[in-house]
Structures are given as C-alpha cells and as structure tokens.
Image 1: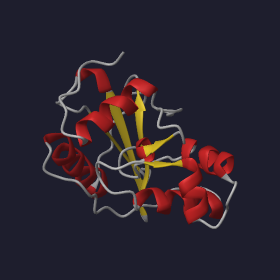
Image 2: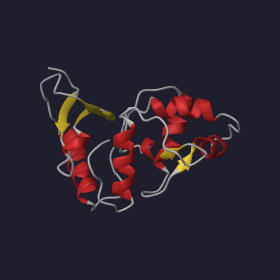
Image 3: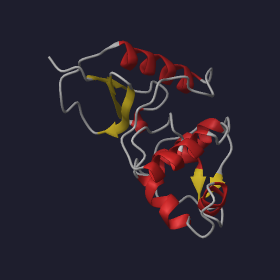
Length: 163
C-alpha cells in the first residue's frame, strides 16, 4: 500500500469551483489542485482529513489562515516564492513586481509569475492573491473564473458562478 494519501473535496459554497484533489506524503501536503474528476481512488489519511476540514472552514468563512504541514516539491526559488505567497494576508492582493522585490529579485516578476503558476498547493498557498501590476487579474492555473471567485469570497462578496 502506498504511503501517499489522496482524497477529494468539493466546496459546498459553489458548484462552479468544482472538485479539489488533496495529496499528502509523510512530511506534509504535496498537492491541493482543482480537478475535473476523481482520477484515482481516494486513500484518505490524517493530513488529507485535516486539509478537508480546514478547507471546509475556509469556504464557510470561519478560517482565514491555514495551519497545515506543507511539503511541496519544487526548486529552492519556487519554494521561496511559495513561502512569500503564504505571507499575503487573507483578503489582500500583491502584484508580481512587489513579490519579486520582497524576494530581492527586483525585475524578476516573470520568474515569480512562473513559480506562482507552478504552486502545487492551491488556496492554502494563496497564489490567487497575486494580480498584475495594473490591478487586473492575470493567469491562474485553476482558471481566472476561480481566481475571481476566491478573491470575491475573501472580500466578503457573494460570488456568482464562474464566467
């Protein structure tokens, strides 16, 4: 039997968001991603259960910060970007240039954007809180409609279906 746990979560607040796959290894969560279907049988474990519980609280509006052990796979630079994303407070946004400067990579917004796009832990590592320097929504691996929904949810607006 694999030591990797896999489970799924469907946010009750909007069918438009779809299904979320949660994957964890011994060291922590390795993936939280939007998927179109259950592509492998669930093998829940303590970490996937904890993630499901905290995601449910987030979507119910009672959780703003996640307290989960994370073990994303990536380069040192990607992990630095993902750590910086985790510092963006609930309901706030940053642009790519601000993150690059924070990381000491002035002018490195494209590299930050690429690392942001490879974030394997959607929502928990809030890559949806990064916007373009002109304030517009820019790429999101989960789709711009989901990004817009998540930002509206955090702003306390009642999000409608995905565009």
